[in-house]
Image (cartoon, rainbow over all chains, first blue to last red; front, side, top):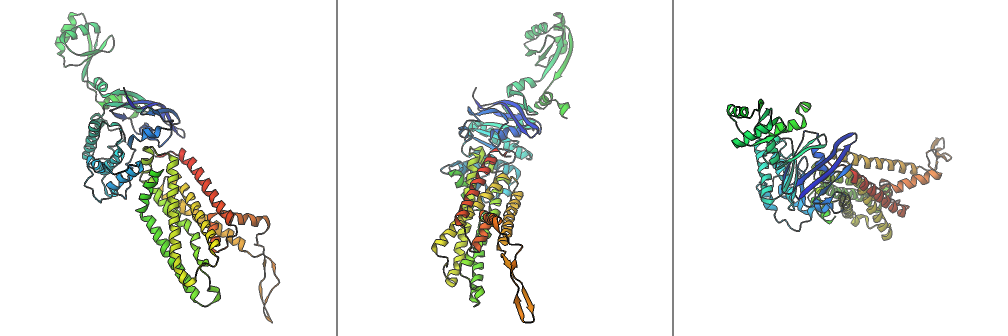
Length: 304
Length: 276
């Protein structure tokens, strides 16, 4: 698998506070990577490091195969765009002039594609209105538009839905999906709005106290969160034989427990198991969402 | 670097503070010189100065203009967060620092140029410079270098402070502080070695016997004071205003040294700075 970004045991300290503590993560090419963690977990610190705004205390990362210590890392950075925390825009300029400024910073010979970017983010009708008079959602979209100048392959968005109204959140979501699906842009999004992230992400990384606790794809997460009945029986081999006979999906967890992915008729199943001399000890319905998965992973009680 | 300069200059030409500073400098120069012309029209010898006495007045104030402009201009990069856009797309922090320095130098030299053009309004009345072309060239060279030194000092403050309001305050206060320090040193050096008081006697006013002035700075200390005055850009400004530049080479080398030292230390710290 091709990776756009790989980090290896990244550490970053702010005086005595360890913001990142040996973080290792992998962002596959073409993914929408949801970077999940509570406030202060280290999401923004990681983004600052990979954007070159700050240097890691130890560890390293590769961006498009180039190590952060390579001189040529600037060439890899040229392929990325980012919105870190708040949108980086000149408030006393119009949307168009903000984009033109970014074209100059990149040294692009002409303003080709400028109106296309404005169209894409829905800011083509703002005219001479200055960015300071924009709504929060418009500023966020302008920040993304600036990040899109120069056709980046990798977009880093730090809490893009923060402070937006429901309509604004929908607009940003649709924009990100469009960029990923139509322009094949790899996106790394940090967020703690789990419901929103679950509608977008193809991969997830869960961060806590500066460490990556778990990294998995959306399919793996879906499987982990799939609606099921967790059964505790005296013999899972017998249970497997019965479920195979009934053509029901299941996963054996231990010698005594298994997850059954169907609404089973309890009486029929219990009767079938009795014929196999297998006792049903307990049955529990499980329906995990990303939120409950996250709480179980990070430890909701501890962090509540 | 070329890309960063292009972006900075594009912002500069549309920056309100820059044009306000340029306009103020122009009005200031014209009004100041016309006032000099008015004084020259009074046929009293003590007011009858040449253009030399007025032309370099701006040398003491250029630092303040540089501080106000540059702190507002580059403070915006931090307050709006746009400095991040430059780093994210791969520009090195060293290049960002140098591009900021070059932009500040350009703006400051343009303000110097505006003064010089505006101040020329007095030439028809006060005539041309009595100091001669060679001295004029030396004075202009000193001014260019002190403007560069001011720009380097202001760039150091602007690039290392992330808070716009703090940057503006600290830049202006720093230049004001250097100006006060230079004034105190200049004032100390202006003390005469001997003083004599006026006495009223039955025979009328009489000058007393000259006595040593306790405030006079002499010996090695005087050399140190003179060096500091020549070293500080504000001191150079005061000296130029009084048309008393005695050590032009030392002044030019001092400005060059300030520029190099502040830039090297600024780049060193800025490269390690955690940008947010």
